[in-house]
Amino acid sequence: MGRVRVFLLCLCCLFSGCAFASTASATHDAFAADTTLGKIASWLDRDGREGWLSGDVADAVGIPRLATEELLEARQLGVRSDEALRIVQRSADERRDFLLFMVQNADGRVFFYVAGLHEGLKGAYVSVNGVVTALDQLEAEVSFRRELVFWEGRVAVR
Figure 1 (cartoon, rainbow, N blue to C red):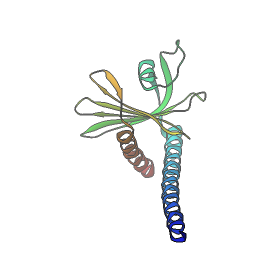
Figure 2 (figure 1 turned 90 degrees about the vertical axis):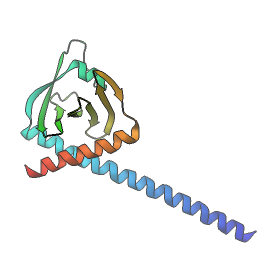
Figure 3 (figure 1 turned 30 degrees about the vertical axis):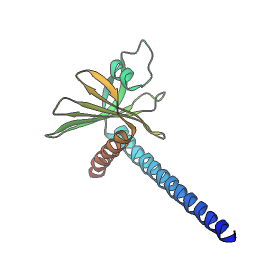
């Protein structure tokens, strides 16, 4: 009977240790994303160009706006390569907190990743032939991290 209790206790410790490690890893990932988003936001504040986000795009990706706002002010930077056009925007209006990462691939698909400065990824979408659909959670997180790495590399060279 004593051995069974020890075994069960060890099993509980093992599972709670795994849960703690998973939580610690998720906390580290959230902190890393938060830090990277802060760097990107500061870079946009400093070096970004004045721009606009259309109300239609804001609606499609869940960025709140007033019905009278056709355009939202943003600070933005873009990079074109052979395979994609990448644009990152940050709200220029202090009442809003969003960073929007857009990636237009050569095949015409456009990916959108909406993040809050402290919340991290809030939503991820793909537009194909004008139809916008949400990405599944796993694909969204992997693709969003790839974008963060891309833009963090751009910040580092400035």
